[in-house]
Length: 89
Image 1: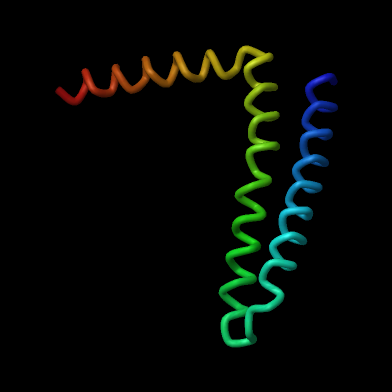
Image 2 (image 1 turned 135 degrees about the horizontal axis):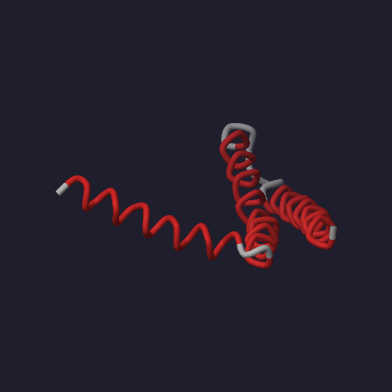
C-alpha cells in the first residue's frame, strides 16, 4: 500500500512538472510565426514530456527496488543472457 501512495504522488508531480514545462514552452514560442508554429508546438510537447517522465520512472524504479524486483530482474537478466550466449556458441 505504501508503494502505491508513492507512485500516485510521483504521478501527480509528473503531471504538474509536465504542465509547467509545457506552459513555459508555449510562452517561449509565442513570437514564432504561424508558418513554423507546428514544429515549435511539437518540440515543446516533446520536451515537456521528456522533462517530466523521469519523475514517474524514478518512482517506479524505486518501488521495484524496494520490493526486491529490480535486483532479481537484473541478476536474472544477466544469467539468462549468458546462458543464451553459451547455447549459441
